Amino acid sequence: SQVKEYIKKGQVTVNDQIIKKPETKVNEETDTVVCQGQPIHYRKYVYYMLNKPEGVVSATNDNTAPTVVSLLTVPEQKDLFPVGRLDKDTTGLLLLTNDGALAHDLLSPKKHVDKTYLVKPEKGLDIGDEKPTAPSKARLTENGDLLLTIHEGRFHQVKRMLQAVDNQVLTLERVSFGPLSLDLSLQRGEYRALTEEEIEVLSAAGKKS
Ligand code: URA
Image (cartoon, rainbow, N blue to C red; front, side):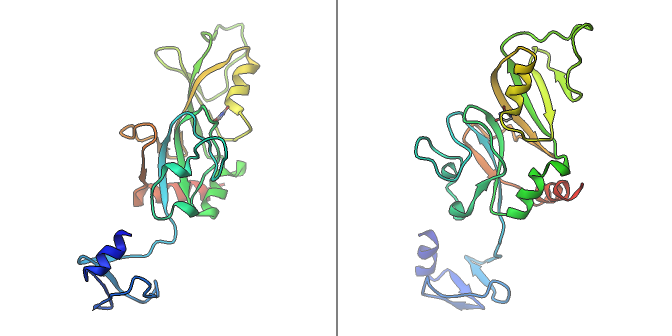
């Protein structure tokens, strides 16, 4: 509706001609579209980082709860899907895109793209020498929480790993996905587009095997 406004005001040109009809067809490869003096480039694929809040499901549709897609009020909303899932009660870094090939690559267990979770365990973690060793990429934070990095994405994997050592997850937040860390300026429920550089490093992470 905003674009219609710009068009009505004569602020949009196609090949240097002011257009008046919002339904004007353009060829995204060959036509030059300028809005308010700014050249507009068509983007087939878009990439967003969401700081997922609790109570929202990682799906495109759901009858019982709001979805992560419903949080993004962007023009491409109906084409977006989350790159993998976080549980309804898990918070943190979730990527949303319309780039199916990259999403597929990033989720492939063969690509070993790391995801790191900040886990608040129910009980203190016993890391005494007589106990079984922790997973290789686990680190305790100063306040006794666990930073756990996994590259598979098995169903409820982190919660099940904690259960396997007689513990429980109290809260779970994803703090990184491959080369990207959660942008801490995003409040829960907020999102932003990835920068060109972030898209590049993410694509590279999806290409390695
Ligand atoms: N592991 C879980 O148990 N839940 C998540 O949301 C992500 C990883």
